[in-house]
Image 1: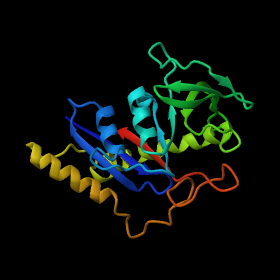
Image 2: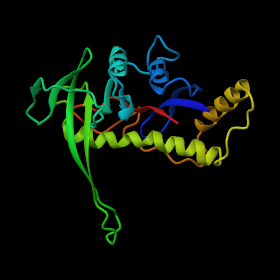
Image 3: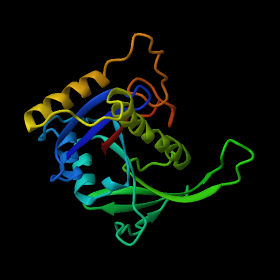
Image 4: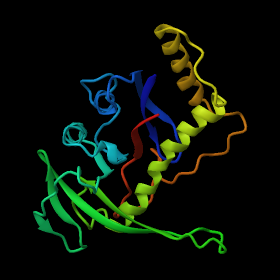
Length: 229
């Protein structure tokens, strides 16, 4: 089995970098290598905003991302194994400051209601999300805007779907030994980064080029991941 962890740009779904290898190595280890300058690539830098799922709400990883100078918005776990997030100070918008390891974070708790577009489908569902970020100033990045922005994390899931279902066509890798698997995986990643000739102009939702406003200027370039395939 192969484990792959990647970072892509929101909006354009441009592959910024990826690492892969044996599934005996955990995704957090690969992710830490991916985002730091001491690892294999150092894909993050100041001025970028990383969106991550709850598998990455770990003390060591949060410390690692913060050390790059990049901002982050990561969903935190809420069950019994969740990080303990003591309330250090309540903010005017209802969020609060806490700490994860050495990093001061702002905790955003949101109630999400999902209503099907089909009016005949009555399966409305309700979810509670907890997000952590090092964007500490509510005037700079409001809770509502950050919750809406977090939806863009799904861009990486779409990227993996394209890789597995469109490019691979649902088949497994053909390589029968590690060198062949490495070569084939590398080729797939390169191929996934080449847009088709008829590709439309990418939308600029939260891409590395432009993004919705969160202050008088704009959001930092948003990237999603690291996330395991």
